[in-house]
Structure formats: C-alpha cells, structure tokens
Length: 621
Image (tube, rainbow, N blue to C red):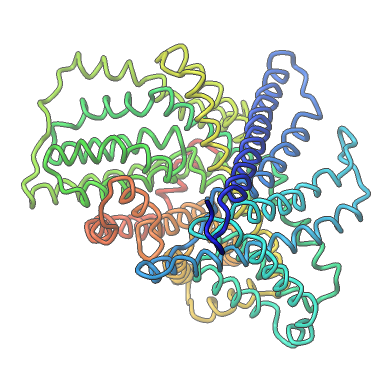
C-alpha cells in the first residue's frame, strides 16, 4: 500500500530498468564497433604484406566506426557517471546534501547535449559531401554528435545519477535546455559585448571547478563564447568535435587500451610481478622495488597510467601491507610509479601529443625511452633511501639464476610486445595505429596460447572496460577541439607567446616558464584535457624559439603527468587510495619525496635535451 503523497515505486523501477536495457544495447554496439575497427586495421596490414595490395577503404571504415563508438559512448558514460571531472565541490558538500553538486552536473550536461543535438542536426542537414573512397555521405559522420547528445538526454531523463530521485531527470533537463536557450537567445546582446576568449575561459574554468565533467564544461563554454557570432559559427562546433575524432592516428589510443585490458585479463600482470619479484624483491624496500619495476614492464603493454595504477594497486598494495609497509606509503609508491606508463612506449600521452603537434609518434616513442628509464631509476633510488630511513629490508630471499630464468621465460611474451611496437613503427612496418591493432591481436594470442587463462567472459569484460576508458578520454579530446579553435581564432596563442617572449630572455627561460605553467595547470586539469588545450598554444611558440618539438613533447607529457600526483585533482592518488580504502591526504603526504624526484628528472630532461633527442638521432625518426 502506497501512502498518500508518496512517489510510487513501480514507475522509477521501470524507467531505470529501461535505462539499463538501453545501456546494454548501446554498449554492445560500441564494443562490436570498436572490435570491428581493430580487425579492419589488422586486415589492412595483412593485405599490405600478405597480398601486397593496400586497400583504399579500410582506414575510412575504421575511422567512421571509431567516431560512432565515441559519441554513442558519450551517452553511455553519462548514464554511468563516468566522464572525467574534478570532484572538489563533492568534497565541499561531503557532510551535507549531495543533491546540489549532482543537480548542477545534470543541468549543464543537459545544456551541452541540447546544444549539440540542435546544432548537430542542423550540420547534418547542411552536409552535402562524400567520403573519397566509399562515397559515404559525410552526414553519417556528423550524425554521430546529435545522436550521442540525444542519447545522453534520454539517459538523464530515465535515470538521473544518484542520489537524485528518478523524477528529477526531466525538470533538470528542462532547466538545462532553458540555459542553452537563454545563451543563444536573450543573452546574445550581452554576450556580444564581451570578448569571446574571456567568456570561453571564465565559463570553462568555473564549470570545471564546480564539478561539471570536463568535456561538457568545454562544450558549454564554446557555445557561450560563440553565441554573439553569426549562427553558422554554432554549427561548426559539432563539426569540429566529429572531425577531431575522425583521426586514424588517435585510433591508436583505443587499440592500445584494448590490448592492455586483454593482456591483464590474460594473466600478464601477474607474470610481470612474478618476474620483478625474482629480480629485485631481495633489495631494500623489496616489494616497493617490485612495484616500480612492474610499472616499467607493464608500461610497455598498456601506455595508460590509470590502467597501471588500478591493476598494480589491486595486487601490490595488500601484499605490501602484509609485509609491514603502511598502506598510504604503498599507495604512494604505486601512484608514483604509474606515471612511467606515459613515458615508455606506447604512452597514450605521446600519441595525443604527436597528433596535436603533427610530429612523428615513432620518434616520440624512441625519444621517451631514456627519460622513462631515468624516472624509474630516480623513483627506485628515493624508495631505497626511504627504506633505509624507515627500516624496510628485503622482502624475499635472493632468487637463484634458474628461478629468474624461469620467471623471465613466463614473462617473455609480454616483454616482447613493446619491442614489436617500437620496432614495427621505427622500421615502417606499420603505423602507430596499426601497431595498436597488432598489439591487440598479440594480446589475444598470448592470453589463449601462452598463458591459457583468457576466457570468453574475460575477453568480453576486457572489451567493455576498454570501451569505457576510450570513451572518457576521447570525448575530452573531441570537446577540446572547438575550444582550442576558438582560442586560436581569438589569437590567444599569439598573446601568450608575446607575454612569454617578453618575460623570457632565452629558450631555456621560455622552457622554464612553460614548465611552471604546465605544472600549475596540472594541479587542476587532467593530462589529456590540458594537452589538447595547451599544445596548440605552445607548439608555434617553441618552434619559433628553435626548441625541438620532439624534445618539447617529452617535457609536456612529463610535466602534466606529474599533476596526477598533486592535489586537488591527483587522479592517480585518488585511484589507488580508493582501491586500498585509505585517506587520499595521507597518500599525498607519502608521495611528496617521489614527487620531488619526478620534478628533478623533469628539469634534467628539459635542460639536457640530448637525453630525449640523442636516441632519435642515433636510430632516426
């Protein structure tokens, strides 16, 4: 019996069940599409070398499928509340009602989706061109944006995120639509009197700080900044977003993420930890040294710091705690060593920088090897000194040569992967994207043939995990494209360049100023979002100053990945602390010595360019 005035339970149950069913359907389409894209890339390699016949259409098909995966996934990630955001406002309301920050997020996500749906459909109606190989109407590419936006609105209406009541979705979406209508309607005369760059930056920063997902904050900011311009400018926002993901180079990101997920499901992480234990487990801070060495080896498999931090933390933190290491210290070691994943091929940050700065990804892969090794050595040295101070000894007996060889043989299939990737790209066997696809096939082969632990269920779960990780990364890349375009159109890069040039008296001083700015930005913004926004600004500046763009790429990635260890964002710290169920603030404190080591290495790499460019000069791009 339902009390008078109470909300009936059946309708909320039905709407959430409907949202869950829609979630599963969209996820299935996204997984199958991404898998198809990967297989198409592999087929291209096979035809090129097996049949000596390069086909003109596989790249086109793969790119179109990839764009659909990203924007279908945009709605999916809304339902799962998985989009990248800063949760500072959540912490402020930690002891009060959580309805406020969640309602703010829903309203502005709805505003962004309403804008993308309306102007995205207008873009589709205006599109008349075709793809060059298969003559597919280009409107099928642009249709991805409004379809993803409408899907996001449907999810918000059917199942708004907790703790909001199910009936709250529709009115909050209505408020979001009202905000969009006001920005492109009644508020236009006011917005037209303001500088677009000022509106853009002010709104974007405000929304990011209050917890709106980064991608949607950028979308709202761009629409507001261009509201005072001719209406056609608003149509180009959806065009920019679709075109940003229509990139064969950026497809390397989901392929490597998928390969890493499959290799983890196939038992690779445990084999690498086993090898590391036999090699360094007997040293001072034994399990901590194992942790760092595992991150080095795992980096050549995944390229993702988040993936490494999560997978290593689940295994190593409980084991370190059993050996007497404090839990925050164990998390600090895991978080700090996880940054190596972006500094050893196939680091995802390197791939994104290569696409943004139009430089060789293969050259970046080679250039980062020495800095990546130096980071690992520096972290190991800090751990050794801390172990002496706190009395941590070795955690196992020195392994015999036979035990080490046996562990090496077990891990050898995984260790061969980075060699295949770097060698294949370096010698022109395949592109970085095709290398990611081949890595996926190799990962499946290892899991089934070598280790024989990859099951059908584990394979499907790995694909689901890879799709979600891909979506949250690539949507930020897509949203940052029109953001960067507005900055460029307002000559913000030139203004920043002139300001830095006025302050810098030499290329070295310019580098130092940029590093300080990047470290500051890293405090508040996730690496990929910051890179997509800042690289287009800095690329022409450093070229004019005569700084090698390959060398600069290593500096950018290392500077921004350090931000994953610093408050308030500190995404790697929060990831390991959440898994280990300990206080993030204690982990931040324990990570300070490792942070100091990373900043020291950053300065060393920045001002000794040969460390990053030397190997490129020897091996070539």
